[in-house]
Image (tube, rainbow, N blue to C red; front, side, top):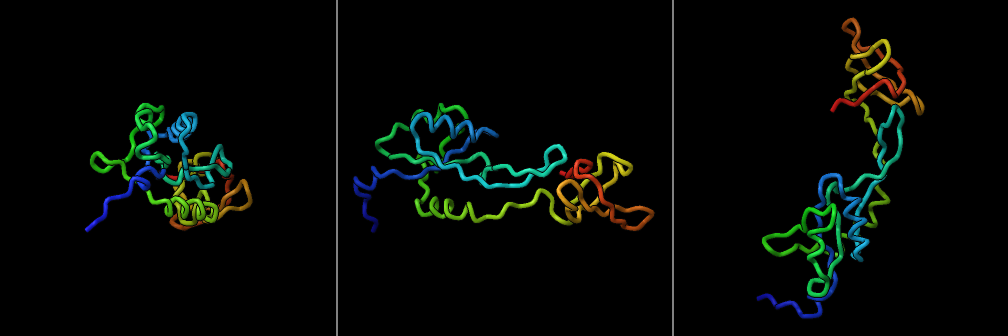
Length: 173
């Protein structure tokens, strides 16, 4: 038989999951913070290709989701629904689902330990967009410095290694 939760545990702040509108997690985070809510938006450092260069950027660990700390019977939850960038509070039925504090702590501890994944991985398909091999499909092999890549392309029914500027290729979606 389950015991009913004590009034003290009902009033303790808990973490809840908020779904944001597409590509608006930062906006939701900022707006919730401006309203006085405690927000946790786990992010990772990742490598991206931008204008032919590799750069480090922060990306959301859970795109379109963030965590907000609320007191069940104390905080006013109604402004959450109308906050710019927020789609909804994740609920099961009519009841918002709390996230265990231990899970949030594990995320906080591990987030800095996750290595940054490279923008391109060996074996990944790319398309050459500029230069004499323009329009050919290729396979990424490795980086050759900061601005060049080593690729495998098929020429005359043989795979040939070529070095090209990073800006000349595009990842195949």
